[in-house]
Amino acid sequence: MQHLCLLAAVGVTRHKSKELSRKQSQQLELLESELRKEIRDGFAELQMDKLDVVDSFGTVPFLDYKHFALRTFFPESGGFTHIFTEDMHNRDANDKNESLTALDALICNKSFLVTVIHTLEKQKNFSVKDRCLFASFLTIALQTKLVYLTSILEVLTRDLMEQCSNMQPKLMLRRTESVVEKLLTNWMSVCLSGFLRETVGEPFYLLVTTLNQKINKGPVDVITCKALYTLNEDWLLWQVPEFSTVALNVVFEKIPENESADVCRNISVNVLDCDTIGQAKEKIFQAFLSKNGSPYGLQLNEIGLELQMGTRQKELLDIDSSSVILEDGITKLNTIGHYEISNGSTIKVFKKIANFTSDVEYSDDHCHLILPDSEAFQDVQGKRHRGKHKFKVKEMYLTKLLSTKVAIHSVLEKLFRSIWSLPNSRAPFAIKYFFDFLDAQAENKKITDPDVVHIWKTNSLPLRFWVNILKNPQFVFDIKKTPHIDGCLSVIAQAFMDAFSLTEQQLGKEAPTNKLLYAKDIPTYKEEVKSYYKAIRDLPPLSSSEMEEFLTQESKKHENEFNEEVALTEIYKYIVKYFDEILNKLERERGLEEAQKQLLHVKVLFDEKKKCKWM
Image 1 (cartoon, helix red, strand yellow):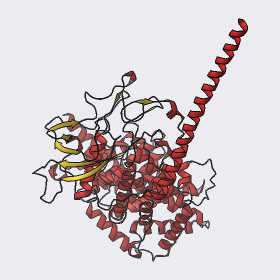
Image 2 (cartoon, rainbow, N blue to C red):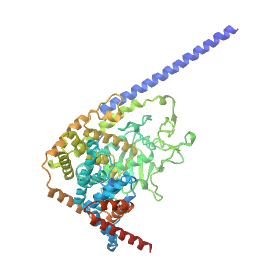
Image 3 (cartoon, rainbow, N blue to C red):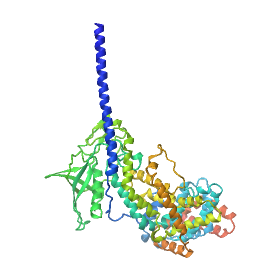
Image 4 (cartoon, rainbow, N blue to C red):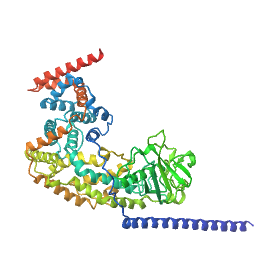
């Protein structure tokens, strides 16, 4: 009996083992089939996919000069925008006080100002942030005195060279750790604003628009911002749900006060079935802009979408009573697929009556395609998938990085070449002037290594100015930069800087994908950069009168742009904080006796003004 039981047990075990092996084989075959499909689809996409580059995006939404300048001067201090853009015409002319007038005259003493800057920089608690702020306050205070500001820049740059020559000259201007380095960034921003707007602005906006277009062709998780199409591996949505394109017939409600007669209010818009309603709104808005060349007359948060179903209508929302509640109480955002919207469906865009809300920030209690705390993802119906999908390999989707690169490649090259172009065979005044200044300083210091001057130029222009612009389109245009776009622009900015590098890249199979992505293009760009630098050097030098005329014209353009009194007040706060140290330095320096008296007079005036406010 025991023998029979043992045989039966062995038989059952063998059967279960065979069944398990069969199921495992089926799973492996399924996984292999999926891998083959993903790889084949990725290959086919690279060969066949064509992105219709946006050729009609309406007027480029440039920021006005003052907002462009303030965003570059104070990239992390948005609070200064308001105080510096106060309407100059509404201020009482009699309010201009004697203390600020006296301070303005004092900082126009070159020896005094240079002494103050060097004294401040020797104070241990005068931080890098303080240096940047002081440089920006100074730029605004001297915005209408650019000839003088340029002379200050020259003196401080020479002084910085003296410091760097004792260490490593190639490191000069590499970081923003001194007043002069931030001052140079600001000076370039002021002097190149015209070139940026007239020559580089349109290809730059086209790049951002095309990049957004490519990203929006695939799923984008609205909460994590990860996307199937990207340049940055860190932002790659590799657990991709099945998705399909849905063509909508969109009808825009007429807005009589905002709309001209020739506006097309009935347009076809392609969205994805995995798009949230908010994402669909954005695509609909962009389609209206592309079709009509001007934006719709309402803001995104002022409009709603309504599905037309014969005589019935249904408002579409990211969250409503029909939203799927997943395990752990997580709410899945509604999508086009959730509402079972099919090709050809009619969607009406209407103006909400009231209670406009700003952009919603979802918490960990919400999800779109990826759970916040899990590698599992959601399909269009909101079902969580584990099992076979958790075997997905991220590396399968790296071809999407290449696909995105191919889609934007021609636009990117157009942008790069506009930056290192010489319109009408002339370099922008600021670039020619400062590059010649650096050449002259190298000659004076008997620096024979051409690499040093190349690095100085690279640190002063592409690194100090252009990278800042490339990574921050919101400094130039009235647009919002998403975290995902930020990640993509970081890859582009890195490729841009690699083009200026003198170091040969030694890349292996384990190199970062963002380096590998543009590895074949960099040698070509490097040759173009060398030709660009040579062409600038070979141009006839600017005369002093030419440069002064340019700076004088730029100064006149920006009269009454900023509240300069606020900048002077902020400068005085630093002076009074380190007053004793500055006064002691002035006492030790020859020829600054008059400046010392003026400083004491300025302090008396400010103290009297302070007492008057308390009275």
